Image (cartoon, rainbow, N blue to C red; front, side, top):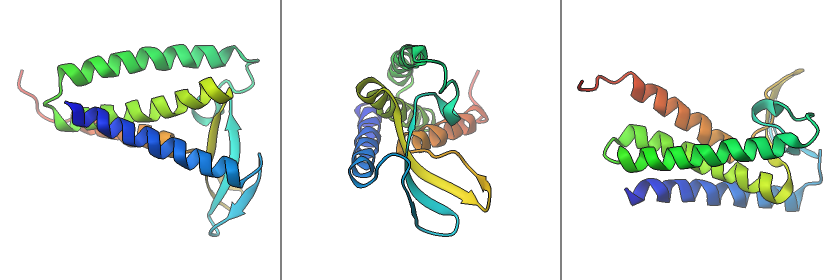
Length: 152
């Protein structure tokens, strides 16, 4: 069971380290073009996914903190209860690590640092970070797990 929490901890460490590198290398809003479709940037997201509620006036920090705290408790419970289900727990571990990484930013900075920015011409995907990536992959694994045939 410990391995699932180690995976979460690795995600948190990788997320916080990469955000630290970006904060030391870039000023807010700065772009560094890597390819024709990818830039490293430094953005601050005060909202949730895709800047949802970013302009809500400040209350959203505590709302998202509460939601994340509840999610961490529930995910921890589910990992403990289902620790033998590998795909399910791997998905949960990735979501947990991503959630904790972004929660740390939200509590210490008041926003989440995003720095991976993909675009094609004028079309772009909102900037994101390692934690966001882990959450997306984790949710994908949870969806995949939900399609497995499970004994009744």
